Image (cartoon, rainbow, N blue to C red; front, side, top):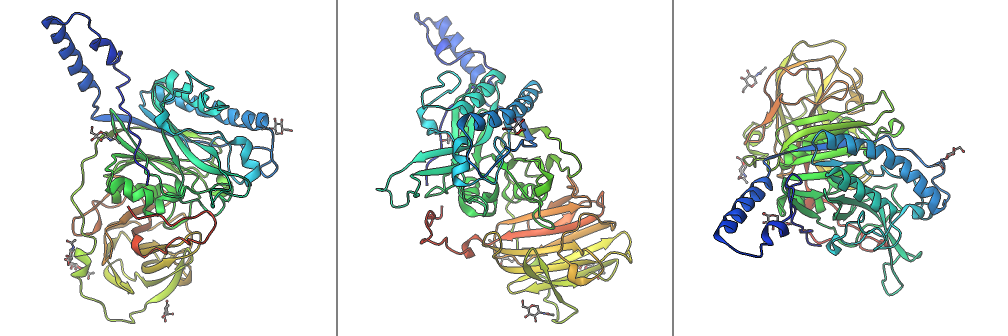
Length: 525
Ligand SMILES: *[C@@H]1O[C@H](CO)[C@@H](O)[C@H](O)[C@H]1NC(C)=O
Ligand SMILES: *[C@@H]1O[C@H](CO)[C@@H](O)[C@H](O)[C@H]1NC(C)=O
Ligand SMILES: *[C@@H]1O[C@H](CO)[C@@H](O)[C@H](O)[C@H]1NC(C)=O
Ligand SMILES: *[C@@H]1O[C@H](CO)[C@@H](O)[C@H](O)[C@H]1NC(C)=O
Ligand SMILES: *[C@@H]1O[C@H](CO)[C@@H](O)[C@H](O)[C@H]1NC(C)=O
């Protein structure tokens, strides 16, 4: 694994640099006092308790062609059209006091390229240790107009800018993994600080199926950087489902805030963007800044600013073609939550007698064991393999036109990625037919007065989801107890689509195939 990027940063509000107050020619006791006072203010100003975060959901402008290579000029022209829109968001965010803004994955050139057709869009992105402000020194690493523009946007607006662009690195036959076309191509997040300096570069590890135009780095990169408003870590889109680098950043590198550029296709009931990303913030106890692309045709929408205790701002829009800027205050150092034992409560519940009307149904290609919720109130337990899920609930009314079920899944998910899941879920079935339980449904009418969901999880990595009708979150309406119950604090403000404990057993994931061309097994952090 690579080490974090370490760069000291002064608060943008401090109008001088260390070198100025410290460059005294005559040291007198008076000037020492002066230095002490200045340093006091520097230190005070350089440690903020809260900051303003911004995320921008961007309606990307697509190239006219994505599979035929275009010239560098045409590529840059398209990228500048997208950068014009990002500039509007960055300027507006800065005017409203934001310290940092996250823009989405693929926001500058879109997606669905081939290896050859993405190439004109790529730039050589150096290791941030070179200490480079592209805006001040644009030609130091060859032709890098996109990095220059992003750096200048950060500098002229005094705001940290997080963006996603493509990196290219030549390689030769002496490297046995060097692709036949002689170069690595990386899906890359970059961060420019408020002076325009490149402070972070992260190459996406867990590429999605459709990203064959990019290579994964040989080892997961753990990229962090310090600011006056907390310690940051960064990863991209599909990375969120895997251990490295996502979990390592939180568990071993103790970041306060995750930066998350994404191009996320919503999948109900459990993997809608705002639902899963806010749940990850709760489960891992970090701030999470998610900026999604806006493109309804591939169901890409859903961005948010999530604190570990509650979503602060979120946006989901399947109705318009518009981008959206979100801003919110966040704690720079969110208080660590008391540890949760995710099996404690449920393991004390008596196991049910088997064959109590259980049925099977498929949720996103996985076969769950379900029980129908028959009463307006009740206590149910359903088990699959090692996982038993327990639910207590009370509905406001038991409608005759809607069916809800409690489901359990304990197994390896194998479609669009292989990852081991343990999931307890209360969900609304798509129709009255029980075989539609787990199919995508976006609206509901049944309100819940209370719920309490728990399970006998074999992992500490459980992400609690609550999703209301029309794909809305329920900030401040539920909590997790230290004995592993996800429970409502009050009657929910809208009808329920799902209440879910989404558990990941990373140690049961298949080992990446060491024989495949460009994938190397990564060491576990
Ligand atoms: C960040 O700052 C903390 C405390 O100020 C320090 O312990 C840590 O080494 C720094 N880490 C990085 C990656 O800069
Ligand atoms: C796409 O094609 C249209 C019409 O030919 C043209 O006006 C536009 O500039 C092209 N866009 C790009 C990014 O090349
Ligand atoms: C969690 O709770 C269970 C059941 O009460 C107990 O057996 C187990 O030791 C606890 N785990 C931890 C890590 O404390
Ligand atoms: C449900 O699926 C399991 C295998 O996953 C099978 O053993 C069981 O018989 C099925 N139950 C029903 C009711 O079809
Ligand atoms: C469910 O369990 C709780 C606590 O054990 C109990 O108070 C309640 O009466 C039960 N509800 C039903 C409908 O059985």
